[in-house]
Length: 153
Image (cartoon, rainbow, N blue to C red; front, side, top):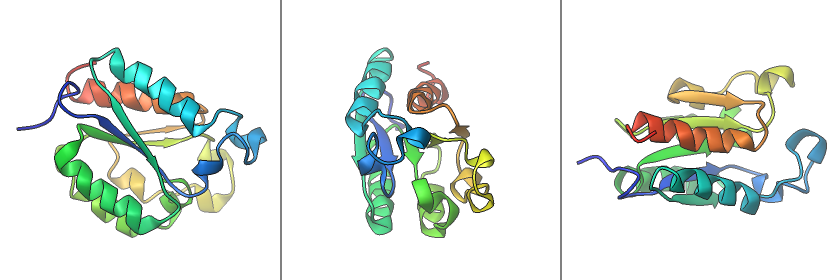
């Protein structure tokens, strides 16, 4: 039986260097921290009767393991794979195992206005939606989209 927002949290995954959010290149990524992002997303999920589980790792394999875990314990995934967007077939393959689970890809900056190598994302091939260039508010949009995709938004 598929999970609902009332029975399972939205998994919010963050890739490499996002642990430095708010301190690293604030001219690109802003000054909000991951704790700020978690608070904003928790508020958005609560409006739909749900919760969030926010995690960050600089290690590709750990992100893959968490995606596998999400299949049993989460209602959907909002993922900012950061640099792994452009390199990780492993993360794409893991997301492809999440049949029927909403996946929303988020980028704080507009990757299409940046260096050409950032214009392609493997994750986009699986994502049900891609949000780029909206700052950390994009995470909130991602939570809202997951809620809509599971019929609770």
